Length: 249
Length: 81
Length: 201
Image (tube, rainbow over all chains, first blue to last red; front, top):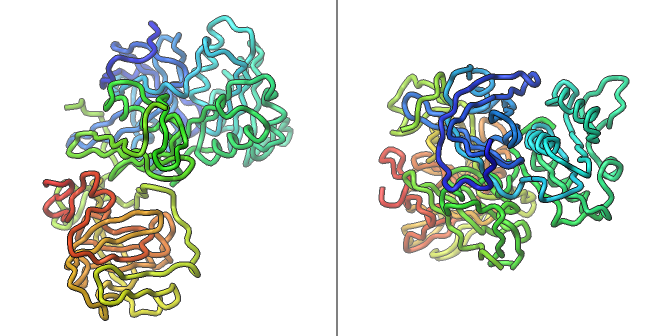
């Protein structure tokens, strides 16, 4: 798929749903075929627009889960119980349905090889979605440093992309650290409880290494982590944040 | 309702300015603090979307869709610095 | 026109009595939270409600005195300019008529102002005659901060952006002074039955 930095125009495109994949009880990945897609950068998002028969429309943004190198665009959607768009995407959408979206959008929360590293990604709940894109993009090319992913989730069943993250860890040496904040298995060897300063100091690269840090998730999570990393000594200018609406951290 | 950030208005700003705007840097006219648009504190969807300076909290940008036409009021944010 | 998303209906609900729903509105069972800024948290011992501006004598009540004023409980329909309407919402508060009882003024307009800097303008006749309250309870419970607590203006016959959350006072003005959203293109009056959403409607 051709790589494009910024689309010249942001137009609504019509895609066709190819496949729906159950990631977790609340999350589904939607694989979309988009004939007019011009490529994207890891970390960007799309706006999805739904239209009812009487013309009523609702629009939401979703991070792109697929890498620029992947064959199809993939969005991973968390079902919000009181949501208007997410329950449609996770419960109603079927293969061969049309889906209207525009993108790619965003130039701030992106990572590509030319930006360098080392790379630290900190995810709260479904904030992990853009990091799947970044990791796949990283793995698809040459690299001399290995990224670290710190991923906070309420419970283990809610961890998205478990198998893929395990593969990144086993095959590519990516340092994946899970923090379970609400419930964990008895023999859990990962972090228990909220992501705190001690855990960040343990997992993050030392400030002297000047990592590129990306933090994505609910606002309170992102702000607490960003503040703590700056307190530890990381340069604010090398910490990038993307705040989501409600999600399960 | 917690605030989001300028990433949330990236699409609307692209449509209005014709280009990617979240990396654009500017200064708050009230307190002088500089920030990239992605770093602004963003509230709400309607009646309009309000972006506030992360330092002083003043309103630096307002997005309103009037009769389907998107308008971006940027008077609190001086682009380029 | 966009292609139709098969099976999508949105949050709307069919209404038993459509005559209660203004044009272009949908009924919702939810109570969406829309805000232009962070939720203020003024401690009650620092809270007061003030009527001032083009008046003979300004008047102000601290919280304890305010909630001791004669109050009413009303059940009203509310209509947001973002197209959702919520029917049969219950509020308890002080009627603005009560607050204006001893206020002498020749002003014809008010600006409601709130913690956090929000303002909205209304005609005096739109907040009098039993049409407006400063409400501190919703659904029988103290009004939550995210919905405007400790107290908000409630003016159900106008679009709900006029019902200023976190209200702290009314400034009486001789002329109509556009408030926050009105300055950005929303209508000075805001009658949902005439679909007065934007200036010029």
